[in-house]
Length: 349
Ligand SMILES: [Zn+2]
Image (cartoon, rainbow, N blue to C red; front, side):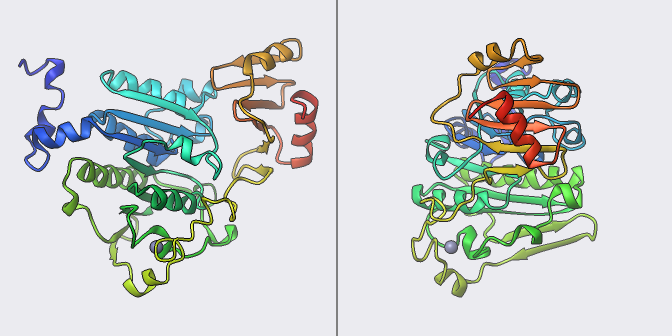
């Protein structure tokens, strides 16, 4: 085998004794879903794609913006200029890194009604969501399917990581029993975020995933690791067994987020944090026929068409991006009423 032939791609990984040829084969036979293609998702995805995970599914509802480029690896200026959907842009860049595996982009907002279909057949999920609530839904789904997932979160210069096995205690809800009020949660839009920190956290997530997938399960960290790069603090938190015994999810089997009894879905309309934009969730029955909409819009203004969305620029101040799942993101306003009226005018009910 020549050292620069495609078959030698994984030589250094196989040479690492705990992985070896057997571990690598297990990695190659794995399916991983990456929930969110932002700062954590793009970095974790790149590591896993380079490591040769056989099937990688990339899920994200957003499009690439200029504020993403500071930390969201994989994206280039052209992705932001064209406002490409993150899942599609990331897939394309990853496919040029490793063409020997399957990469599947999904542009969607994950909810209790579609999470089973979106994460179907995943052997492991990387939590790279920008939405705190979605983790309660993911945790319920993981417990219902006994699927492991690697929680990661990062704001400012600090973040935390832990793999939850999906099989009993402890689970994410042992750690955070109830969703905190939105006003109590710092986000990257309000507190900022440092690229070095998101790369570190994503790298730790990918590392736990590789341990699990390669069969090195006893090496998976059993504590919640939390790191603050600015105050130079590293802590490990053991989950309290007494608290776990009272956990509604893993102890009592109450999967209320998955069952839809507790909503984690975006509101019907929401001002997108830190952006001059509003998202409207049109209740769509099934998939929106984007080419039909592109045709309808042809005489109205400039139209941009992709397999994942169509975008209309009705005037120089606004844009409407319609996704296949019926969501519309209106830019150029932070007023829900104005966004709704533009939506009614151009998209209809
Ligand atoms: Zn629990």
